[in-house]
Image 1 (cartoon, rainbow, N blue to C red):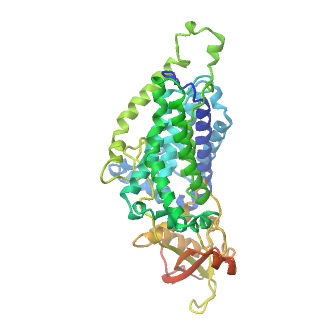
Image 2: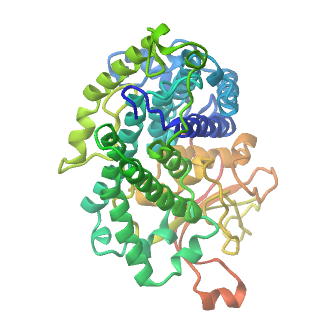
Image 3: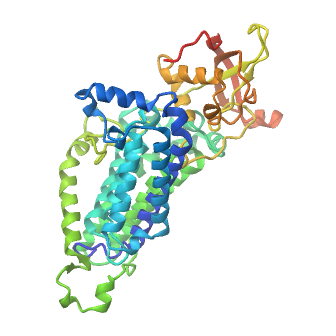
Length: 502
């Protein structure tokens, strides 16, 4: 680092800008494919109803985060236009096009992504109530100030990226230490791979690893989340301590974070949470000599460029310095939360989703309960032959190996995992049952298998099953991945005339 300029972080900037933009691209594609059946005009939680409530209750609606759809009436077509626009802008950043101009060009591009996606997540209700939504928003906002190719990245923005990564990792570590006993007695990962929301292709193999390995995993997790994040800030010491040691310490910390997150990528499906953490880890990886000189510096002597400081335009230093000062103020609630006795998890302290508190999986469920939805076209439900709807990501067919979907986010599948953890069925699930009874095309396309091939069922019912991974001996018998036992009937057979949409 050289004062205002993080001269050795050019490669880090390229990875940050392109990586964060790639995640926005995935997020907009996910929204384009799923928002309308989940939250559109005829969705399970219609966004127009939320916006109508906001118009009728302006004082209470102040809690609603900013969205373009407060000023422009929501329609499914406008949602699609917003998504396609976001995809196009994100693709341009991944290709490096805005970065070829002055720094305000990529800034505008990232702020468009940030504002567009906030407009969506603000009306996303339950289906967008995940910590990685606010993580993507904050990362995109900070990326807007990383600058362009003709200048070094600003030191203050690189440091803010470290601060974001610190809150993400250290917050998760503190949540675990304060959470379930399983994290303190080192047994959490004996359950996690089997009971996590959406297992991946290697989750069963990870679950079957010996107990001593799972205990070691928890120790490594505590070390990587509670100790390692402090060393992300080591490169700052390079301003006063000569030599490569501060930079190497920062690179080592970033590498540990990235490797532990890569293991989670290989053994689960957590949308873009792990990928975003890996991308952010590159912010602490410096390579001496990688800094790009500005075009002006290469063509004119430094003394003739009074508007440049360390190769960065003066106006950009003013903007990024103001950003740093604003973050000092905005970060105070999040800093207090990290050390609070009642630590909040995935909490935002302002309407703009900046300087948030992060953390996940403070407790690990010990048993996997799945809600299985079945349908029949037979007239008598008591003697009917029932057929099971199959979801794309969540367990169903016991012989099907879980697929890898992350960083793509299957929102319906994720919320199906949360249902058994609640005290009652949620309204969106009742609406989902109605859509199945109607054989609604957009809803059925969210599923992997419609057992009735588009026909309207006469009856739909919901059962609960306990799932667990098969042992190696059980797998050798019939090659099943899961074994399951039926628990109870949650919703008796219902027809379209018997159930009302909430």
